Structure formats: C-alpha cells, structure tokens
Length: 265
Ligand SMILES: C[S@@+](CC[C@H](N)C(=O)[O-])C[C@H]1O[C@@H](n2cnc3c(N)ncnc32)[C@H](O)[C@@H]1O
Image (cartoon, rainbow, N blue to C red):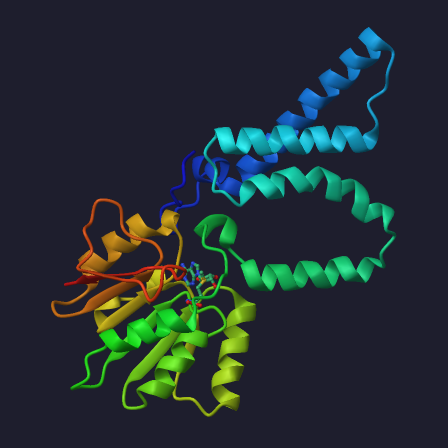
C-alpha cells in the first residue's frame, strides 16, 4: 500500500484516494458488499438468516484481513475489526448527543491532519530524552527543535536541563500545541512552542533537530534535512530510521526502549 504523503501544498485526487483513512473506508465498503452477498447466499441456500451482530463481526474480520493483505500499518487491523461492531453498539447505548460532539472536537484537536501526515500522537519516553541530552554539545548553547512536539514533554525537559540553550517545539495539532504552550507558561519555562507544520520551517535555523514521527514521514524528512541542515548539525529520530541511509548514531537505553538514530551533517 502506498504509504507516501501528498506533495507539500499540492492536494490532488490521487493523493486523496491513497490516504490510508480513505483506503480504510473503501475496504469497509467492499467488506460490507461481501457480507451482503454471504447473507443473501446463506438465506437462499440454507434458509438461515445472518444476524446483525454476526454480520458486523464478519465484516470486521474481512476488513481487517484485507487491510493486512494490503500491507496497511499494523494499527489499522484492530480499527477495521472493531469499526462495524462499534457502529452497531454505540447507537444502541442511546448516549446523549453532546458526547459525540465533545469527543469529535477532542479527537480533531489531537489528531488534526493525521490522515494526511500519517503521524499520530504517541509520546517519547524520559529514557529517550536522557539519551538526547547526552548527545547535545556541552561547550556551547544549542538551538534545538522537536518537529511534532506533541504535549511538549521532550522540549520542556530539555529546556530545564539546558537553560542556556534555546528549545522550540512545533506541533501541527491544536490541542497538544495549546497544552504544551500552557505548560511552558505556567511552569515558567524558556521553551517556545509554535503551532504549525515543520515542513514550512527552514531547518538551517537549528543545531539539533529531534523527530519522533512515523516510517511514512522519514523519506521526505531526510530530503528536507539534507537540503537544509548545515554542516556540524545533528538530526535525531526516535524509533524510526531512514530507509537506505546509514545512521552515524544508534543508541538504545534498554532492550525495551525505542532506539534513537542520529545523522551528522
Ligand atoms: C509521535 S508524536 C511525538 C510527540 C513528541 N515529539 C514526543 O516525542 O513525545 C508526533 C507528533 O507530531 C505531530 N506532527 C505530525 N506531522 C507534523 C508536521 N508536519 N508538523 C508538525 N507536527 C507534526 C503530530 O501531531 C504528533 O503530535
């Protein structure tokens, strides 16, 4: 399955069709059609009716299997499996309608353009932050950015460890950006948080670029970093390497923690 992202600023029909969320919806539609055929065949051949619950389970299993076969990211299989069952169970719970609006606003604020960037929110751990801190040059102040700073944990910690340096987080999703900016303000941190897309930044402005993105984002990040980062600077990526580009640094705090990869320019 095409895991690539659309070209920056050039939305087009092909990019829309290949977005994983759109592919997932198409797979559900195909699975629904297949289950309808099975239900009709069952009723015609055996005189037995497929129950709504049985149809939802079957549709989920078919959709999850197609998603695996199409090599979609691993998290799509459970989503595809549970989606038809949730579509039946949740309306039957007769929840107040405002709950759906609040849930929608919170999820939109958190995930924002994840359907396009293919980078959902998940935080890095303090063990990774310590590994990064050990790699920062000690003899001078540094300008460091977290491209996709989430709720700001990494940047706030770095700023506390190295108060003479300048730490910036940029985050595309409004909710985590707002929380990180409030954390910096209330914690009297020097850290800066900007809301926006890192693709529009000039990475030449930074000595250290930290990324915790996703495999889908790494090839375009590498193109941007190698075009913009200055000699002597450092690109760090938590968990995800860059296909075909040997890292200069590979650090793993323990066998349970994600590796930290580094490329020196
Ligand atoms: C895996 S989380 C990492 C959060 C944080 N850096 C950490 O280490 O805990 C990735 C974050 O990047 C954000 N993101 C994805 N694409 C982005 C982009 N193009 N520009 C800015 N932020 C982006 C997502 O919204 C998400 O919050």
